[in-house]
Image (cartoon, rainbow, N blue to C red):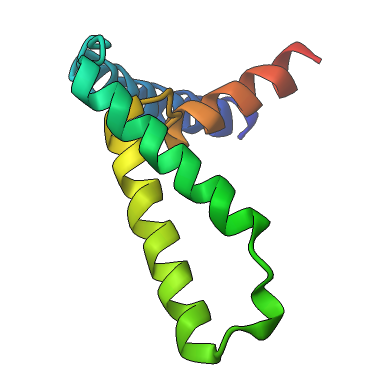
Length: 103
């Protein structure tokens, strides 16, 4: 019974790792930002700092809602320009399982 459980666990882990490897091969290489993109990112950063420094207690509900929408769109733009490192769910599960087996 114990061998059966270990074999199913092994099949599960191998299945997840195959998906993780295929996802890792499709990641684009990091591309350097152009001067225009750097200016855009600087503009977004400055605007976020302005919003943080604002006194929001005097704003109406609609104005606060507009600020939140603006921050969300700027965050999406910044993420699109900056890239980043992301872990898939399968990779996280594999790391946890490996830590459990090692410890």
